[in-house]
Image (cartoon, rainbow, N blue to C red; front, side, top):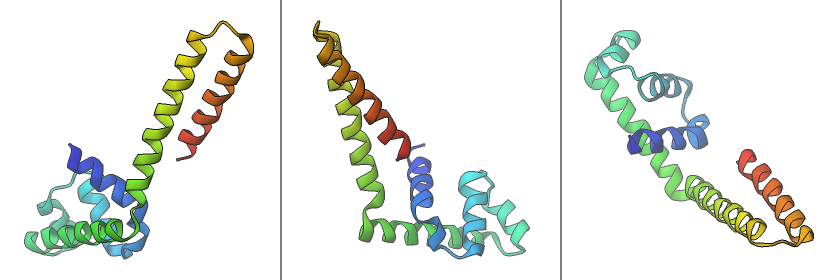
Length: 118
């Protein structure tokens, strides 16, 4: 499962850098869960050629990530935002001061906006 999530994230970030043919095939196998045999039938190629194409796409997407680190940065930012949200919730719950609670609410709202934009 973790592999599929990684493939999907890499595709989300770098899929537009693949050719239209590669994107279509990759979406069929990774996103739509087609087998290599089904892809081979659709593309009128051998099962081995379908397998090789998807592996090449995987390698290409991994190479983009090695150079650009966009997925890595995205995950780090998302994790940091979760920590900020947790801290703001703790602050809000631990304080009786309405001003502190108001600030905590603003932090939570801003953090939520940022996470939803990622």
